Amino acid sequence: MKHLISRLLKKEEGSVIVIVAIAFTVFLGFVAIVTDIGLLYVKQNKVAHAVDAAALAGAQELPDNPANAVAIAKSYAQLNGLDPLQVTATVAPDNKSITVTSNDTVNLVFARLFGTDFSTVSASAKARVAPARTLTGAVPFSVLKQELHYGEEYVLKQGAGGVSNDGGRWHGWFGALDYTGGGGGASEYRETIKNGYAGSVSIGDVIDIKSGNMSGPTSDGVNYRINLCRTRHSPECTWDSYQPDCPRVIYVPVVEQIDSRRVRVVGFAAFFLKGVEGQGHENNVVGYFIKEAISADSDESATDYGLHGIKLSE
Image (cartoon, rainbow, N blue to C red):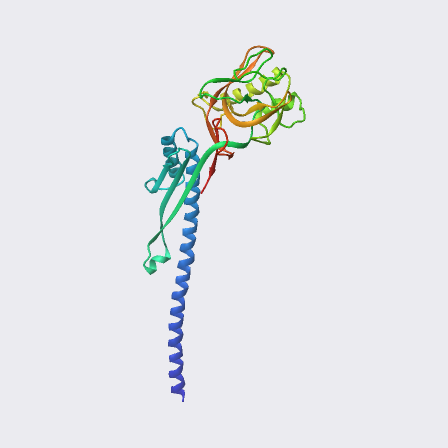
C-alpha cells in the first residue's frame, strides 16, 4: 500500500512540474507581449510627435519656399531623434501643405524568444497654411484694404499732418485701433503696442478706431520693441533676416472703413518695424511688409495678405 501511494505521489509531482513549466512559459509570453507593446507604444508616440513638429516647422516656409520647407522639415525630424533616411517630406502641388512621414524600426526584447526580433512603427503628419482668420497678439495699428508688396515700406500709423500710402482716412483718425472698445487711455495703448493685444481678433470683427495722434505713447511702444530686439539679438535683425521671436515683427489687421468711428477687419498682415519717422506730432510708424506663418486659425476662402495660419490636417 505504501509503495502504491509513493508511486502515485511521484506521478503527481511530475504532473505539477509539467504544469508549472507550461504556466511559466505562458507567463513569459505575456511578459514579452506587455513589454514589447509598451516599447512600441512609446516609440509610436515619439515618432508621431516628431513628424508633427517637423511638418509644422516646414510649413512656415510655405507657400513661397517649398524647397526650404522640405529641408527644414527633415532637419526638425532628425533633431527629434528620427533617422533621416527613414523620413520623407513632400510639398503639395499648390505649395500650401507639406506631409512628413517616417517609418522607424523598434528592436524587441522578449519577443525575440519567440522568433520576432523587431517591428516597424509608422506615422504621418500633414500641415497646411491658409490666410489667418483669428489671432492674438495684434498691435493697435492698421492698414487699409489694398494689395501689399513684399519688402516695401508702409505707414502703419500716421502722425498729425502725415500722409499714408494706403489711401485717405477719416479726419482725426491716424490708423490706431481700440480693440477693447472702452476708449482706454494712453497707458493701455502703449502697453498694447509693446506686448500685443491679449484678446483675439477675427476677420469680420468690427473695431472702434482710436482717434487722436498719441505721438508719445506711440514712440514709446515702438522704440521698446526695437530696443528689445537689439538687446536680444546680435547681429541686429533686419526685415529680410530676423530671428523667429523678433519683437520687431508685428501683426496688424487689414481693415475697411465703415464710418468715422469703426472699421471692419478683412484680413491680417505682418510687418517688420522700421521705426518712428518724423518729429513731435508728425511722426509716422513705418514697417516693411513681410510674409509669416504662425499658429493661428485659418480660412482658405479669406483674402491672402501674407499672414498665414498653420494647422495640422491629419
